[in-house]
Amino acid sequence: MCKALVNTCPLPGRVMVPGAGGLLLAITLSIHPAVNDSMSGNTRDDGTGTAVPRRLNLCYAMGEIPDMIAYQGFSFLIFTFYYVIMNVDVGLVTIVYIIWSVYNAFNDPVLGALSDKTKTRKLGGGRRRPWMVAMLVPLAAVMVFLFTPPAGDDVVVAAYMLAIMAIFDTIYTAYSLNHTSLYPEMFTTDRARESAGASRRIFMVFGLIIAFALPSFFISKYTGNPAETIPQYQMTGVVFGAVIAASILIHVKWGVKEPFYEGHASTGLNAPGFIDSLKITFKNKTFLIFVCASTTCWYCFTLLPMLMPLYGAKVLKQPDSFMTTLLLLVAFLATIPGVLMWSRIDARAGSKNGMMYSMLWWAFSLLMLVFITDYPIAMVAMIFVGFGLAGPTYFIDRNISNIADEDRIKTGCRREASYYGVHAVFIRLAAILVILSVNIVFTYSGWEDASLIPIAPEQVFGIRLLMSVFPAVTLAIGMVLLKGVKLGKADVKAIQEKLKNCT
Image (cartoon, rainbow, N blue to C red):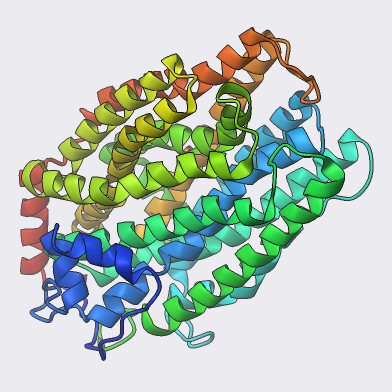
């Protein structure tokens, strides 16, 4: 079995640093050695004796920008647009989210298995690259169609909402799953992944800032008058699409190295079929426990941006869209030093324990929000929330990469896309838990109709609970689950030693 394993070696490339965000990147260079190495050209060894080129490292990390803009922009705006602006009943919105999540439960593993079996010379050639190239135009276009519902009653608008959300997620998943699957394939050692992972998180922050800040330049009030606000949402979609197209183009041209196809005659690419792949994946107890823990984090990732426009307008009394965006900017800027802090903890404690510590921090920081109704205090609290948020975004991919490495030893195949596909099943189902939480709180407090103005104190308190107590309790459950993952720091080191010896 070990004979099928192949170490991957991205080819050296000429140094080229994208200019956008240079100042913010420079702030981090002197803080963390992994980021400093990746930016300075002294990039960590990839496990084959060859340093990962700086251009490849940076342009691969740039793939996080369209990923974040697409999904976080979608998550941030879609609920408020249809519930508040289009005034769709919260019950219909709940049904839409549940059907959409169930669809995704089948959509993601199918795309993952298809990606693992892909082998073509078209669209740039390879296994992952052709999928990303094919999704460039569709992903840019669907960002506009998210906000172009037809005229009609609630049922018509809700039906369009369901259809466009399903189309969006299919296109997004086809891009994101393949981009993410390249991470453990291109960077094959813990040191190389630490370097590339730090770069990814920095670019992820850039993407998050664009996703949450850009709308405020076009949308004056997230919950404003529909006649004025709908065109503003649509213009936001147009700009989102343009940035997504440009960044994917740079990513696939200079940031993708298909190790199974470029520079290797023997690939070991004998991936099992779709059904067999799912069976192997679902028999991996370590993965199943981890993915349940990861789902608790994704519950928070989904819930917080969804409710942030309402939290800013109703709890903090800040209807202006820029003031809400400023809260998010503070949180996401705090993730930059947060990622550097958690990467140091990762080096000392390992990815599993580091993720547990970060979830504990995040839970306590979110609990503070239940007591806060003052905007300046909320701004300070968002710094601590940002440090907590940085942890799971850093550790989830690290842990899945370790699980995929262990699987590679057992099966002789790289099946990252299958694992990410099944992982996506669980995290998409988190959206059902999120919308049910929102539905229960809003219905119990008598706020089924978004046009109810002014809202009662108990409805405001419900938003506070959803922003604090609900995610904190969910993260506590995730920490308990994570204790059952048997991939500590010593275990991961042993796995990587076996991979080196199996070439």
